[in-house]
Image 1 (cartoon, chains in turn yellow, red):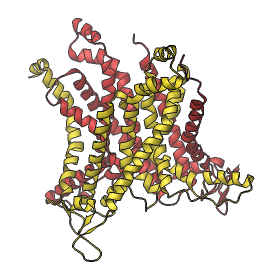
Image 2 (cartoon, chains in turn orange, cyan; image 1 turned 90 degrees about the horizontal axis):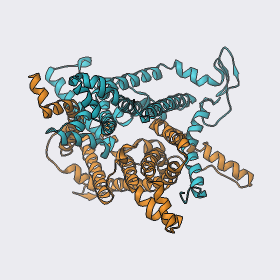
Image 3 (tube, helix red, strand yellow; image 1 turned 60 degrees about the horizontal axis):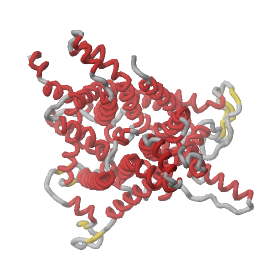
Image 4 (cartoon, one colour; image 1 turned 90 degrees about the vertical axis):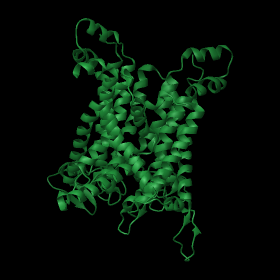
Length: 307
Length: 298
């Protein structure tokens, strides 16, 4: 038996890959299938799942409620669609701002003296690896009414002799946007850096020799060659922003609800796993669609591993 | 010569982005020395060391540890110590298992052709393209359905029932750590010259000896950096832990999250500062391993 295994390369490969494959099947594929099954289920009065086939959860997500205030048979409430739209908009805005901030820094690091390059990269890794929850907390402290930002503006205003009332910065949509940008900025810097670093210096020299202006060189050489990094970074930023619930929970207050908060509350507060599963599937499908069209247009580089 | 190397725009943007990245961290560390117990505004450092804590209103006037009062408090906080213990137990258990099975899978994917290969590959890429919360609630549903069925089947009640805890958290952590270990080790295997292995085999070593004496030492740096990366992911994880933990399996991120929704004392800042220091050392270690890896092999 052992001898036969020795000669059978395919069986060896299967055996080596088997533990990981089984593990991933039980903890990834199976849960996703279960989520799908449960999303067609219903909630029992005590918060358990009743397995059945009903599209009620999806109809409810679309806004057609069967449980109306005025006792009507059906009514339209766009609440959940608004939450989905808000999450999509936030993910889009965050990604755009993050690209705008990450690109110059990645460019600077990629073109820096090789001796100092590691130090600059190191400085990006520290905030990246500082715990996610701690980073939200740091912004909570900065944005509070008594926080550093109000303190600085207040001091400047005092010098200028302007009367200043501390701003309510925390628990606003802007606070959530800043928090998201801060959380995911390093995930954009690293892949863009990786793709910029690969560009040979001779390409810049050639462009300059041929009389291209710096701006034109950037548009025609640097930008196209760094697109794989931007694409990878976008995937690493857009997808998690769509599903994150801590940032909005802590910086946005109870009123600011994203898809992540909706799903989390269905499981932990509202005890309606069936509805939560449906929302979770919609979230997954939305991110997969965006990822699919985006990567089909721009390609999917190895830069994704960089972060 | 790169035409826009010295562009002032790039320099200004660089400085601003670094300030953006570090201002919150600096603030966090500064407030960990706050004399004010309410931690609303920074009221200066705790001025003096003395045998006992002297308070004036909400201000700490002197303490046995002086400015490091909140750090000493932290070391006495049994909840924090328990959470830290859980975090490390989970991370160490998960890292050992995920490194072993992840390295095996990397070898299989890089070296062999087999029928389930596309499926293995797909399952390792899915966690990258779906939001973590989808995976989290999926695992939560799986465990709660399974435990409900199992407990009902055996008629278990009370403490004998299977429930969420440190085991479910560890099992779930392995699921998101394995893809990273596999990817990193696979990248290392890609640049691997098979001639070394062939030479060993020609010299009469069998597969196992070849693996132990040639292949393994050569991929070891890749395995180590994959393991370290996965380890930090485990320490850092909030979402998966949030949905799979139970009584007695609170980890540090979950503990901090719980505090943020209640009263915040400078103790949270002290905890954060210690954490940032540990991260700093871990990143240094990782860079050191990678710089050794980059050097030519003998």
